[in-house]
Amino acid sequence: MFIMCEGCHSDTQPDDHYQEQCSACHSPGDWLDINFAHASDASTDCQSCHENTRPDGHFTFQCSACHIQSNWTPAVYNHRSSLFADCQTCHNPNRPPGHSSGECSDCHKPSSWKFSHSGSGNLDCRSCHAGDKPNSHYNALCSKCHNTRGWIPANFNHQAAGATDCQSCHTRPSNHYTGQCSSFHDTTSWKGVKPDHSASSDCQFCHTRPSGHYSGQCSSCHNTSSWQGAKPDHSSSRDCQSCHTRPPGHYSGQCSSCHNTNNWTNAQFNHSGYTDCKSCRYTSGRTLVRAVLQVPQHERLG
Image (tube, rainbow, N blue to C red; front, side, top):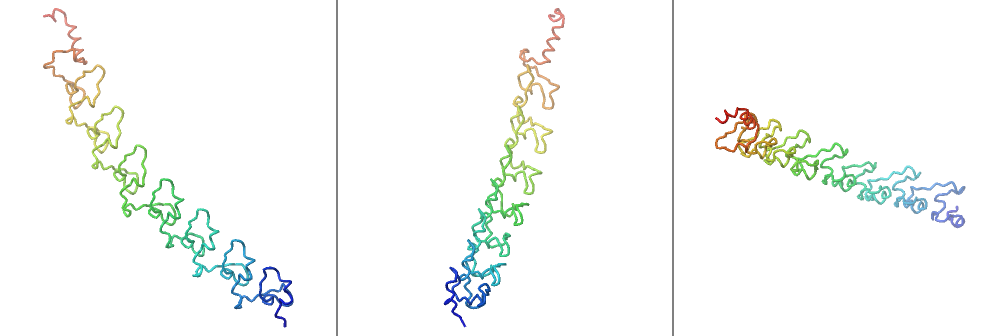
């Protein structure tokens, strides 16, 4: 019985070959009839034999952690083993560029690379999704608006967040009112604007006026329901010219000298105390002069 194979076959042993007895794998009849008893107590160190078959960049622990004894495939790793809690020692080459640098188990399950937000390390969304945020986006946690199933629909709970400063998140159109959004809008929609005019008496702060329009406060003529049906309060001002313009060649004095506040017609001027008729050159005056000139001279002198 020959048990010391090396005494005869040492010259035929390849470099880096398994250093134990040839009979541990080979049969006496043929070198290719190989059958190693992996179940024996002496075969717990796989790398002592299979190190030269390990691919570049391969997992550096024992082969038995993933492979079975009969074949290299299929390979199944027991991720629940307490020995291997550091996923990156094996999966770091699988990490995409710009990927989160945390542990794989923070996002992934052992059975799949599919992401799981339920991990205990997923409280700071920005640690992973910073590259997904658009320019000038709200800078708080993604979970304030988004759920873990998708970016849309997004729904922000303004009450729960205690969000009173609308401008910290929302931008406005050009020439828009510069006060808080909540002065006009509610938290459900931008539409259906209902301004609270009681919060401000300075209409000009928000509203612009047509060219050549009265420069005073809108509330002097308009109400908060509509621009139509303007009813100016003439009792607050006696300077008609500050609002009303006149036709060319019209009397240059105050409108109230001839007109009332109801309409422009039925103008009546109180001539008492006025001796210089030429200083007033409106139509009725010119009509009166023409009428006088049509009277015969002897009648006018008489």
